[in-house]
Amino acid sequence: MLAEKPAAAELAGGVRLLVRLAPQVVDLPLEIQKFDDPFLPWTRAVVQATSDKVCGYVFDLPAYLALGAAGAVALERGLALINADLTHVTILDGRFASVGYVNMCLPTAFAPDAATVANAALAGVFVRTGVPVLVAGKAAGEAAAGTLDADCTQAVIAGRRYSIISATDSAVSRGWDFRESLAQFVRAAGAGQA
Image 1 (spheres, rainbow, N blue to C red):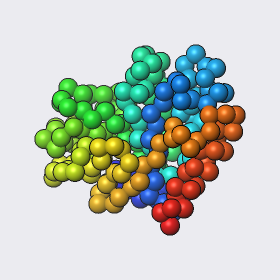
Image 2: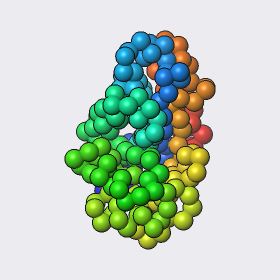
Image 3: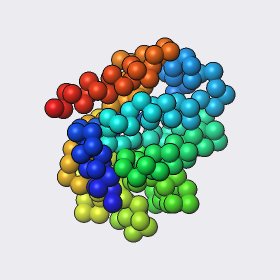
């Protein structure tokens, strides 16, 4: 299932591109900063501006949890929003270093399509519970669905390489035009693949 979702979105959009969602209040657009809990409105705005141009989204767990419970709710609802369309892959980037975190990835919790683990030795445990994994670094191991590079700019899923761009890149406007600026940034990144 994990390999099929980005491949289907790739066919629809023609690019192998994922968007990294790592919100920080200081980097959010002005219109979003006015909210008490700004991460969910920002996530919705990013998905709205990019969903027709990308294959999926990589959620940065520590960035979302920086807002505490509000960030966890934004993460859960953002994942649910994207998972509802059944075409875009969702990856929870927690670089998990212990099997104790597998419960965060189950359908009763955040329910991403895949999670990142710190090393290949953990992949088997996650996979046995039904959670596909990407291993941070270069060596995926047999149980893993792929890899995520250390600086989160490339992912390999089922042998296919995907570029990852950040929704908070400095090239994206923080002003009232941020949705269009983000859409242009994603289009340019996709055109660079053609």
